[in-house]
Length: 139
Image (cartoon, rainbow, N blue to C red; front, side, top):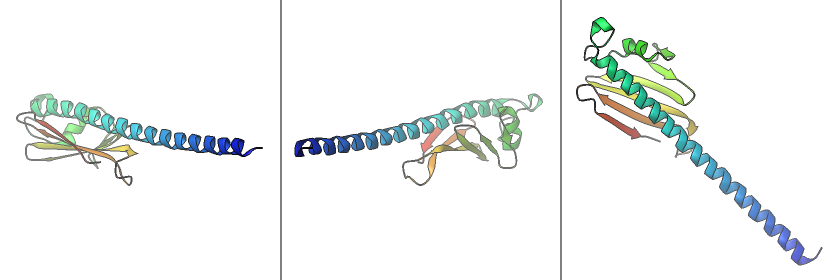
């Protein structure tokens, strides 16, 4: 083989290697972004159900303008774990807690986050009286 042929072969291998590395990075970034959007979407759905619980009277099984995370878990209709106050699905795990008039949902996804050491995470806070939702992306 001539030097030009060997040079072209080595150059081709380098270009293919770089392309594969860039493709894997793009796939990982897209997977992370999709998982983050999925947990935020799930948390918004949970916030809507929680808001219905908050506003419903006790004779309909509601919270009567108070957060009771254990009773609210029955409203979700998912596999709610009352011991840990969590719901898990294919997108991640969601932890529910309340303090005063604020319900907090922390969602932890299944994909690695921006820091490369922990999974994607977001926090949603729902204020009961005015139904204000604040979402924070933590990773």
